[in-house]
Length: 412
Image (cartoon, rainbow, N blue to C red):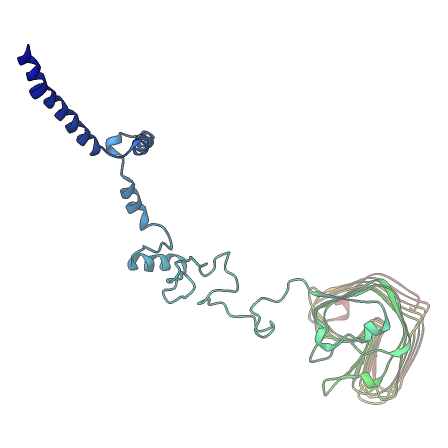
């Protein structure tokens, strides 16, 4: 028995104790503490989300390695990939605006919707008509200038008469002060004048405000116009009194260079007194050029006094226009009533017509709805003349090529 105890103490117990020591040492080599074990379990659960066999799932490093080279603007792109990215976005190997090499930021390429201020290498040239230094196109909508008194009317200058809409807000009484013609040969009025049905009254046009291109002087509320639209406005008590009216075009509009829409306009109770030579006068336009899209519609010349004395170089007088080159357009609803017209011509040629003084056309024209009544015409022509009723001198077509529909008159 004693031998068994000795065996337990000196042989078996040491062996058991040694086993515990060995197991404790082995446990120190196991991976991590309890937190680490939980992390490993979470990783195993994440791997289970792959829709394929766990053994075939790519590692995280493999995933990053495969996608790294495809991210645009990634700092870790190789030099060759960066050049390819530039080619696909900017379209210009020399462009500085495609990708910032230092910061790795993607910049809008040429033509990109997010490109602000334009991109380098753009082949589109700036419009020469735009302001210096401004690469934008001219505005599609014209600037609007609203006028409501004499000061506003006379503050209009040649510099603001292009691509502009002038809007009348109320009637304006000018108290027989002078007004300056809108537009000249260097800067014609190119825009819209919207009278909103209002009236400009009691003003004077004088030779101090002649618009002159060296060979022809122009006087009117509108001096020289082109690509213009004038509508829904009345002018009354205009006073023109000129004794040096040689080589001139006079009317509500002095000279139209082309493409004019004139509609719903009245000239009434006004006085035009001209003395000189080579005079072109029209109740609405002194000298006119009509094109396909021109409009002369709903025009009334009523209760005016016109006296003209022409001594040399000829005369062109018309109730609507003095001298016109007609290449198309729409002319209708013209009213010439209750006027006193006195014309004395001592020159070689006088071209006088109830509508046009001189008409030069390359095609047949149609004029509709004309009313010429209650006028007093006093024509004294000393030498050869062209007085052919509606038209004075007709050039480029025969008289039968002029078709007048619905004429109401008491002059024949």
